[in-house]
Amino acid sequence: MAEYRDYVVKLTVNGVTYIVSVKPYERLIDVLRYKLGLTSVKEGCGRGECGACVVILNGKVVPSCLTLAIRTNGAEVQTLEGLAPEGKLHAVQKALIEVHGIQCGFCIPGFAIAIKHLVDNNSNPTDEEIKEALDGYLCRCGSYSMLIEAARLTAKYVSEGRRYFDLRECLGE
Ligand code: FES
Ligand code: FES
Image (cartoon, rainbow, N blue to C red):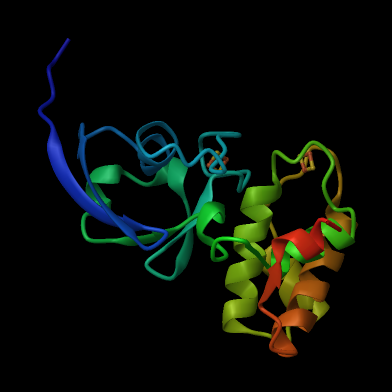
């Protein structure tokens, strides 16, 4: 079997800069989950069809299972772990709690990233725009109507200027 050399990649994830060594065939999901311990990034299909692994890469939502790590040198990446400052929840996380949109939770990081990206770019999306932004994301538990409701509520919070919420308050402590 051919031996592949290592390449050095420098990338900023959730505001922290990392230098990692990668093989040319390694994917961004491998780096995020197994080298940086960011386990919100889930592997569902592994072929760009379910949305479980999406991250925001240089301002765009991309499937990390289809992104070669070697191509992310110099990139800015955001995962669910970096959506809110310490001790806070992002509006999308609060909305997901409120609408009881979480069953097994496997798909939630992907939906949360997609909704966050949507409201960052459009704080007053129509239902059509929400459905378009979430098109192709799979929820095996079938929580689609609650996830759309969570997107509506996130947009409402963001349009009111309420982007972050106190974590303890959200948990009712
Ligand atoms: S695991 Fe990447 S899109 Fe399904
Ligand atoms: S909540 Fe289980 S896959 Fe979506």
